[in-house]
Length: 104
Image (cartoon, rainbow, N blue to C red; front, top):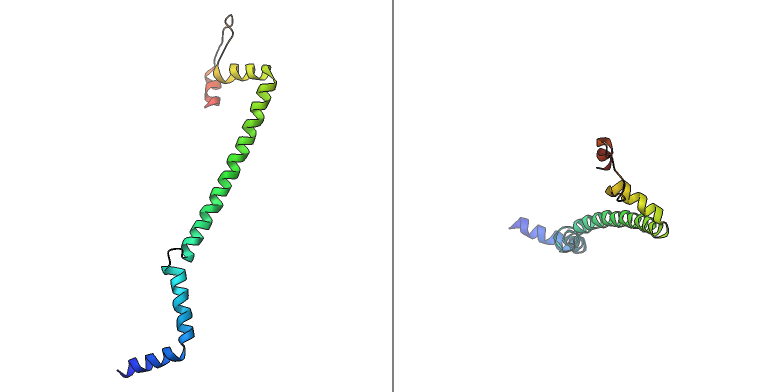
């Protein structure tokens, strides 16, 4: 019983420190939006922002290529021939295995 009384007296003496420690424990570990979860969410946000930037660059490159194809019909024909193996009705196409491996 004597230990409980001395504990209670020390808690009463340092009530602000005990309150501050309880607050820190709640904020860092127990709260729904605790500090550990916020750190994880911040890391995920950084990763997603990097992904957005990468996709934005890819989108810009594809838009540039699309504009180039709209402006130049020779480029469109070249891509159709190289990538999709298209041909004119009176042509013969020879496909080499090395070319097929490069496309994959």
